[in-house]
Length: 57
Image (cartoon, rainbow, N blue to C red; front, side):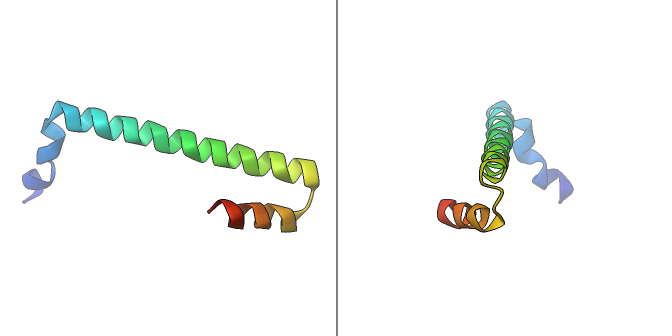
C-alpha cells in the first residue's frame, strides 16, 4: 500500500512538476509576507493591514 502512494514519485516529470509548484508556492508566500510588511511599516495601522488582507484574498 505504501509503495502505491510513492508510485508517482518514480516519474521524473511529476517530481519536476512538484518541485516547480513548491518553489512557486514559496515565492508567493514570500511576496505576500513582504507586501504585508511594507503596508504595515508604511501605515502603522493594523486596521488597514486587515483591510488589505481581506481585499486580496
